[in-house]
Length: 91
Image (tube, rainbow, N blue to C red; front, side, top):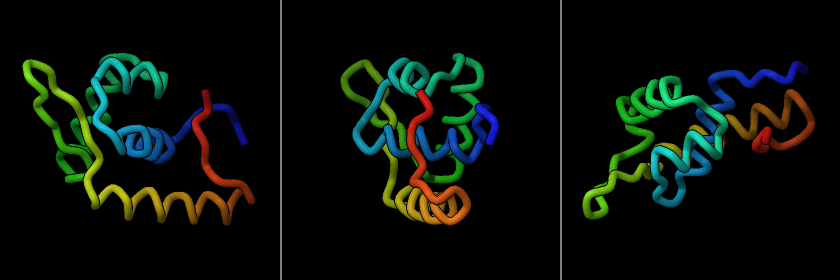
């Protein structure tokens, strides 16, 4: 398998990382994304209801919803079947 991640792997990484509230900067740093693509991934996940924006004072944090658990479980199961190993952060 090549070293490039698919969008599905990146969605999984973001959702797993956001099980606790995370800042935008924290997400793009941990998931190794640039700002523009990070915004696109987060916008998609928010639109689909997998992530919510949580205001903490003057800061916005991102938190995975219960719905995200279904995606991460299904993705993990499929990934294990394909590659005989659980998905993990590629960093």
